[in-house]
Picture 1 (cartoon, helix red, strand yellow):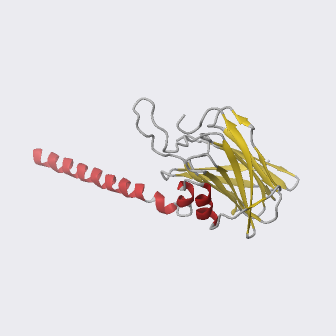
Picture 2 (tube, each protein chain N blue to C red):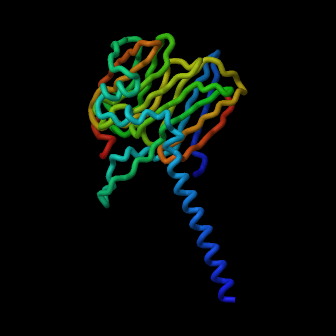
Length: 104
Length: 157
């Protein structure tokens, strides 16, 4: 899979705002294929972990109820320009992806 | 000569078999890796059961310190932007629930040290229902709800 996470982190004062966009189908497992009538198997991100300086600032636990190509935004105290931020997701099929970004 | 070829073919198919077994074993492991994912909470079909499985209790106080930003009317239930903000102290987690969905618990955000009470994401909503934000701060659980009208369902379409 190609790189599918877009992350931006911006420090303003002592608060860092993180915005992330991931590309993922986020199938609930409840939807049916309109042509064949077969249930499309569940395929969604279960866990998103965001780390700053080896400390986990945010763990998001998701179900298939999060929209396709999920968007996530959160804020945390600390974080200075030039620090790196790691974001990683794992889905229910065990696939995972990571991205590293510099705080601006 | 023919015999030698047969040997090679046999070796080749044996190797392929071994790879197949390895892949099979690999497919079984992801479940164990994500042991922290509260499956019972995410598969529960009502709000109380989901909260019980996630937080161990379903008693929560309504609090106006929690602000939910979501549209009054969502034209497309597959993409409903929701922002939850709270200035309560010592927030441990923020959960987002769409009361009308088949599995109401949508997301739970565990906030680490330094994280502020702010999360924003986009959710799917099956029908017009309340979006409930549940905030766990210390040993208390607060909640707030906002009704969102959905004109086209997001689940099952």
